Image 1 (tube, rainbow, N blue to C red):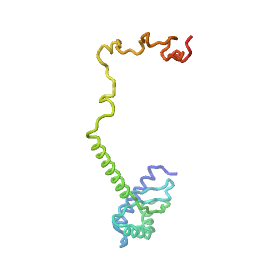
Image 2: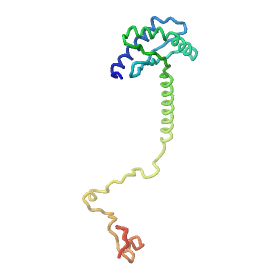
Image 3: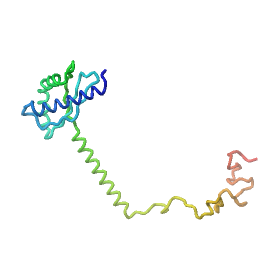
Image 4: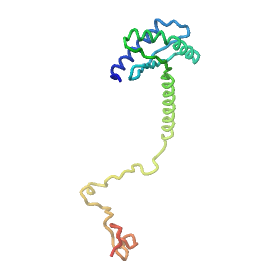
Length: 180
């Protein structure tokens, strides 16, 4: 196992070398407008994965993938020469779906904005189902001093049944046990 910082530096260097090779040295007519987006390398520095995007149609993408596969040996030998590592990592080219993912996210965001606008239009003339302010507010300053005008704990004699409980079922409402 190798230090993660060393692996990251080597991956960055491989990305630079591959991008430079694709720009200057590889003259395959099948190679389209390629951008190297990322490079990842395993912890043992044996395998490097190079992610790329191609601007163009599906046919141009397929031709570019074939051109990269055919140039893989030349690119690997140049990576080995310029990095100076004992074992040159094998290189795998993977089409990065970054552009498609970004377009899909943009579509989802546009749909969400349209739904939000639709909900805002529907809510324009709507009124609350309950009270306008569903939160209880103190009636005056006397309630804050402890003098409660609507104290529910104060029961009138009319509220009590024969046994002295309010429910009329023979149980004490506070403890849940039968009153004696």
